[in-house]
Image (cartoon, rainbow, N blue to C red):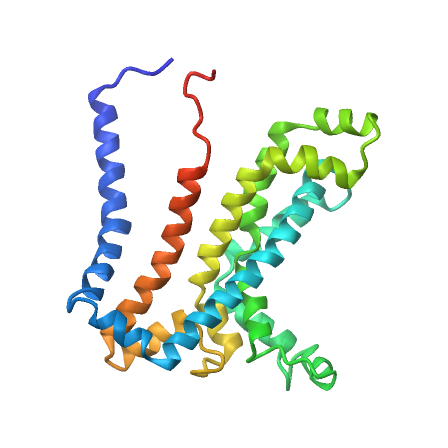
Length: 272
């Protein structure tokens, strides 16, 4: 049963809309406005710059790999947290949220201290084995995967709690194996939570800056991602190119969210 609308309801709605407009919609709209101030000139300039094109390609490459890693890891950890009881489960759950509470700069520094080729804890050994982590695409992928780690898990865990284990136990009692049970019972039940977590992870990966800046070395045409390119172009007084690159990043993220929102089945408010 819906609550009757009162003056307070409209006031709260107005405050929420004003807050979102001032904090999100207006600033983003200004980026779009400045991108198209001269028509398509800014976009054409950005897309004709080899360093910007490389940065966009590297960003997509890194984001895809980070999402793949976090999807596989996220599904496994979500099932572990919800379906199993083991010592240290609370600590594991807290550690998963660590990337949300620690500054990305700190994340990048920690990864550099671990995987740095000269002074890192594991870096020299990996370098001797022919594996370059810091100041290479692999290091950028690790930094990006770290900061977007919790997003898939935090979408899946509540849904797994909600669906319970009755259907999974019934499938196992009928002779289904673990993989068959997961593929036919668990995955269809959580697919939209998984898809939304993947999209959020993608959007977060596309926009990562702090951890990537430290781990990448920010070398144009080699390890510079799109967010780092935006900073460089803006500081070099190439604001049009910076606006256009920012617009392209935002466009990809927003498009992914819109597609998921459109395709996701609508819930019936009456519960039928």
